[in-house]
Image (cartoon, helix red, strand yellow):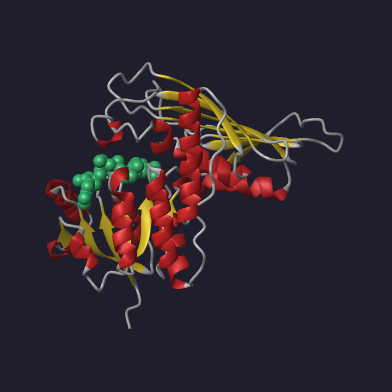
Length: 337
Ligand SMILES: NC(=O)c1ccc[n+]([C@@H]2O[C@H](COP(=O)([O-])OP(=O)(O)OC[C@H]3O[C@@H](n4cnc5c(N)ncnc54)[C@H](O)[C@@H]3O)[C@@H](O)[C@H]2O)c1
């Protein structure tokens, strides 16, 4: 019997990476492609040689298709929760793009619906599958850099050509839309910040209704501090430079660099003169691993790590940063979902 997961991919721009992720998974096959823009649908269908009987412009056609048991959602952020909930209610497993949602009520709804559903739900926090960031996590857990006392990450990406659409929604602040990558990375590496304080400026993207650069400092428990910098109008290549400072060493990694750097100390706590340069494939969009992890959770009934609550906590920290930059006061993220 053919036990392969039957996957429908909804939204076919960045979502083409989900098609590629599913195609590279030996336990899955593409059962449907869906995009309400016929040109984008045709482009993806032809590119991946998916027969046109499997092309759909209306995602509702996926709901009633009993053959399909897995759906990936890569539509504008404002539609994530609506489409994911409809799919979960139809019993389909859902891999949904980040950020999970933009509004608190949507975060609460997806948590409720995924709690009620037997199907698996995963938010695609893809940086957790970036080889350099996975390596950083492994090094932290090995104890080689001691206890963390400061972590920082940045999401700097020029949106100049991207903002004249759903990204210009006032609710889709750059800290939530793209900055969620850096925030989620720090949460994954260092835990949940208990308080944030942020400043923002608006210099580069005059047509968007929110700041295009924000810096936030964060207080974690256990004497740990953090910082996130988000710039959506920056004049440089896309970077997620990340530095992790521990009592016995330091890790520096950046998706624009082919290596990461590890500083360690000797028995007396003196920093070793030559840092270790770790040659590691640096790839920010490891969609193949992301899909494999999701498929494994479905097939072997494992817990999904970036489930709805985890995705919601990341958005909640981002929302706290935006609120702090607006009100000029420290804000405590509300993790009470
Ligand atoms: N993980 C990452 O690094 C990363 C990178 C880029 C985008 N994203 C996320 O992926 C999602 C899509 O972003 P994008 O850059 O591809 O946006 P986009 O606007 O370029 O493409 C969205 C696609 O969805 C289609 N679409 C819109 N509404 C639809 C509907 N109701 N039914 C079916 N198709 C519909 C559009 O026609 C379009 O083809 C967003 O949530 C974004 O935040 C994630």
